[in-house]
Length: 416
Image 1 (tube, helix red, strand yellow):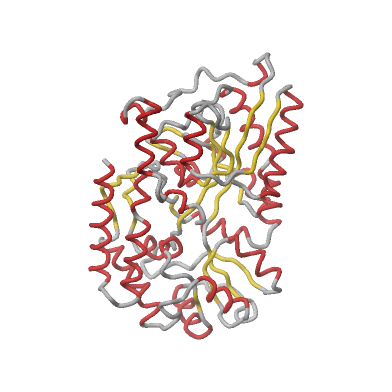
Image 2: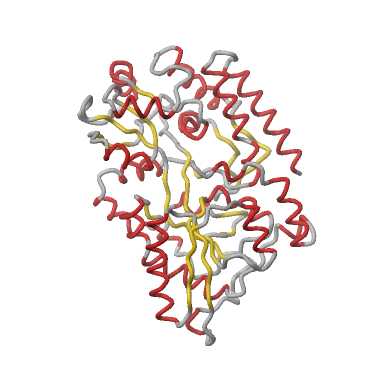
């Protein structure tokens, strides 16, 4: 959720960098390493190298990654420097094309990969790095373009239902039960934020871009004006205008404060809010939203933290070997320090050691990876306007959806 701002404002620079770095826009879409077959294990490389890793994880998490990287370095005779980094696509692209970028980006949210991929800055993942049978499918889709994987999933997240144990003992089991309790005891969230509300639209049958399978998205097929999309928008309007669950101007601060003060029973958010409620002494639980009126699950956006090797790295074999080592030794540390849900299925049992993450993981199992293609940058503003028009009753769901689709199609066409 917190990563979507990365995509805004990158597309104009994207074309310039892609042309400069790769010679043409068609060349820029080709991976630098189609098969990865030339990659060797780091153990077969005789000369010690120094790898630089930029990480978008938090400071405590970066410290844990550095510790594990140092273990790998001691075993291989190499050196690793892990740097905390919060720059965006422009800075990475400029550094990479100047030969001053990192070998690895570790912890980048997957929905920001689109501009990197289009500019030819992602090295294709070689054979043997990802055991696909051990990764949640939603995380694999999140790092795929046209059948090829360009990053390794580290962890994933999605919003879920916070329920206040001072007001309800157990999470609602059905939609009717949820709605009855919500009307009696309260439900609020940042409804006009498309990231949070997408799960209701998708759970009703709407979508952003049509998935042609395996995470291959069609940016010319926007699914807001479909019957399902309109049904989802109607539900959002009902939350405000029929059921009176929340005011149309509700924001996250308002909803969070009401939940923390035990004034409402339900709140929709992600794992980033857990610590604040714990520190405030709130007794709460986490669960997936119940099955929606459509008969389908609530389908939130799923965010995946990823690791990739720069196509401009001079030490690709060693970089991939380090990523494999980190994947084997870091996930449980990130779970303990940062509440990160491991992408590997083999580590799913460790979620039981945390009273909240199993609920988020269950919610994510029904979700959709946030679109990772560059065209997603054209969606956020029209989608937010679409929801605002509906909840403010300034347009019908049909009118608002059609307006958003036209705006997105126009913006996507302008990129081509």
